[in-house]
Picture 1 (tube, rainbow, N blue to C red):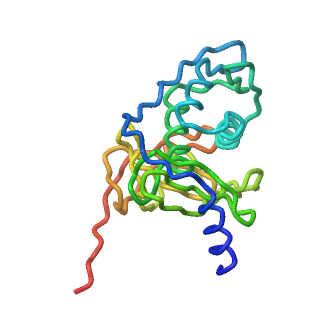
Picture 2 (picture 1 turned 180 degrees about the vertical axis):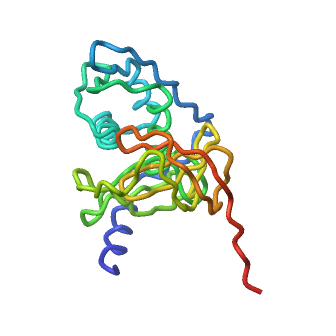
Picture 3 (picture 1 turned 60 degrees about the vertical axis):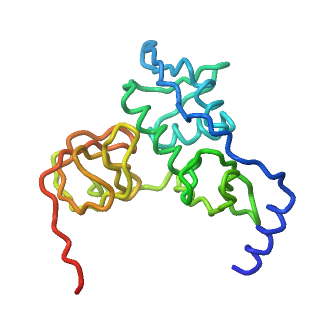
Amino acid sequence: MNDYLADLDRALSKLPEIKGSGERFVVPEPRLLTEGKTTVLENFAAIADKLNREPEHVFKFLLRELGTAGKLEGSRAVFHGKFTSGVISELIDAYIQEYVTCSECGRPDTHLIKVDRILTLRCDACGAHRPVTKRQAGVIIKEEALKEGETYDIMIAAVGRKGDGIAKKDKYTIYVPGVVKGDSVKIKIKKITGNLAFAELIEKKVIEKKA
C-alpha cells in the first residue's frame, strides 16, 4: 500500500493543476435506432465526449453491462439485441458514478490515470483520488444469483439521475423506485436485461440504531 501511495503521489505531482469549469454537467439523452436485431446509439460519440472519456472505454463498459456484443461505427455504437433508451440511460448513469463522479466533492471534473497498474480516478476540482474497482467481465454467475419474480433483501447504495435507487448483487445493477440511499429494502425483480435488473419495492426495513 505504501508503494502504491508513493507512486500515486509521484504521478499526481506531474499533472497540471486543473480546476472545475463550473459548467453544468448535462449528458445528452441517448438517441436510439433499431436496425433489424441490433440497437444503434446514434449520439454515442457526443455522450463519450461529454463524459470526457475515451469512447472505447465507455463502449466496453456498455457491452459488459448489457451482456452482448457490438461495434463502433464512426460516431455511433451498435449493440446486438434490442434495448430501450431507459436501459441505456441507467447504464450511462452507472458509468458516471463509477468512472466520472468524484466521491468527495461530487463533481464530474475528473480523469482516469494508472498508478502501479491500478486505475485511479483523480478529481481536478478538489484534488481527491480513489482507486477504481473494475468489475470482472465474463465471470460465470450461478443461475440462482438473481431471478425474475423472486424477492431479495438489498441495501440501496446510490440514487440514479432519474431518481431510482441503485443496488448491487453479484454482476447485477438493480434499480428500485421510491427509495433513497441507505434504505434497507425487500424487493421483487420484475425484469432482467443483461446485467441490469428492474425491481419493485415490497417493503422498507427499519434499521435499529445502537444506543
